[in-house]
Image (cartoon, rainbow, N blue to C red; front, side, top):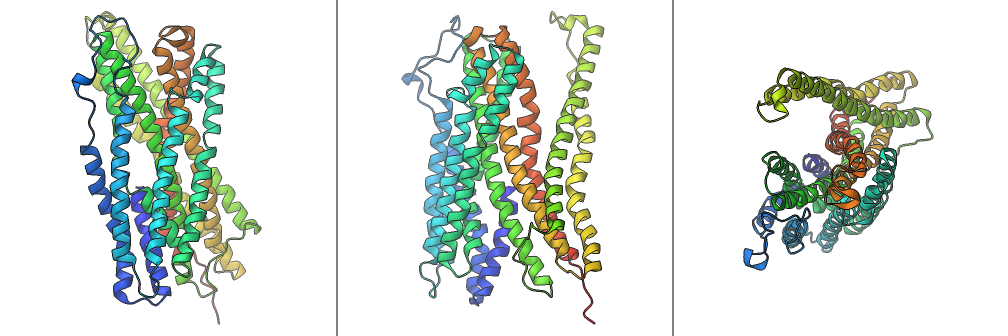
Length: 497
């Protein structure tokens, strides 16, 4: 989804900057094709990265015996996260080489011989951005680091302290990713401006391409999380030996980290993509207005400020509705489980089978029903705001009033969505891995008071990291895409007679 949004914005900006410089038609076509070429490269390098993954051969380590009492993973087993990161680094290395070649082949201009090099540096900046965000997210969500252990320690004091510590970690975790994204935007814009006159925005587009140049591999790492989680559930339900459970527990913990890391990657790329879509929105408005180019958004204007307030409101209302939807669906499942336990008491001692189909049907039907309102809110809000202020603009003879308000709406919604998504994703991942850390035998292990408090935190964190946090990526990109499509209709056509 980020790739689709980034391709749309990048192609519009590429066409705009190439046309403004009066480049020949073949050069304009090459600029427009550049985003597509980079993402074709992504498929190739990510596939190579995935196929290159391997763990140490069996002779390099020994598995625990089946009757081992050790609940934790063996220290001589290779860290699964290190294995995944090795493949990721190979994909990135191949991606950098490929982008350098594509940049020279498609962006070299006789009039501006250094342009391709500056744009390659923009892409390289995006690659560094991706690595940095993944590392930051790992620090805040992996139980080998201090933040998660802080939550585990707070769990020993009670349920409330667990929740407070998790919220604190989630809020703090937004700092460094935002600094990274901000620095990337500024540097990429400067490099793009050095490459071509007026090419700063296209520089940020190329940085986004660099960040997404290994997106297929990142999606594979994201998929690893649910697979490992379900494998752990199967192992536990089938009563496998402890050494098997210890391995799947470690894989599950790594899966939580990769899910949080890839969500951090997603929201970072979504922020850059939304910046591109905002720039494309302003370009589209400029092409369709009879007034001066639409290049400035004045937040000192009350209408624009109100648009910003509405943007922040939509993000929080959407988040509340989606979390409430999870709670209502969960209550329906609890009611069904209790009914089955009454009708089939043998479920407790494994003499009767539960009706899993009924629970799955409830989850699917409730999720589809309860997410209608949040979905309608996202699609309708920019359209309603745009047409409402279009009418006000007509009364004031101001063509650009509605586009300015919608732009303010998008800016604040994007900023709020990025921050809130980072908080929800990282807090949820940290809570989950704090529980895993305790289950390894720390602070009393499973069944202890600390573990019960950690389960409470994990329960709070699940809708954070699995529902609302990831859906905010979709929200901010969908708001920008809908506004881009309907943008020309928001212009108040003022009569010049």
